[in-house]
Length: 213
Ligand SMILES: O=C(O)c1ccccc1NCC(=O)[C@H](O)[C@H](O)COP(=O)(O)O
Image (cartoon, rainbow, N blue to C red):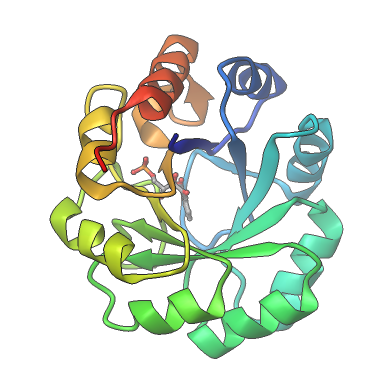
């Protein structure tokens, strides 16, 4: 079964809906260097992370400029995992993994040539359609066949992200066969506010998509 992460939760009511829909993970976006309606304050991310129930993974999604800052953010928010976007190189990702008491997900653009190094450095790789400033949440898909090759080649779990919606997630899972899928803008009613029906459909279709042997 393919796991589902719903990213960019800013409100308790959306967190409750995402958990009720059966999502495996929730993303809380804080301390990012791009302008996005999904960003929350560090305090709010901390409160939301504390409200995530057992058996659902809270993921701090952030863009730190150093290893120290990444570790500091994890210490403050206390998530189960941290997802790093931006400019940290693979050796810095590995250093965060050593120092922070959480699993580390490296977010990379699907066309990044250093993808193998990131995969070695992190606990999981989120293959996304990254914008020029290193941010996610673009709503753009990428070359799924290429990401399918990565999934086949790498030992590290691959999370597929970028432009997924309830309408295309089953095809994405069947094509790429990722460990998990991730969505932010594709299940929103408006920026930063989730459409609860879309969240339910996304999780159900991701988890029930058929992955042939
Ligand atoms: O969601 C954002 O606006 C964002 C901004 C800066 C860094 C990361 C961000 N999102 C990270 C995610 O995990 C998204 O779910 C992923 O990029 C896919 O987004 P979308 O294409 O909108 O589904």
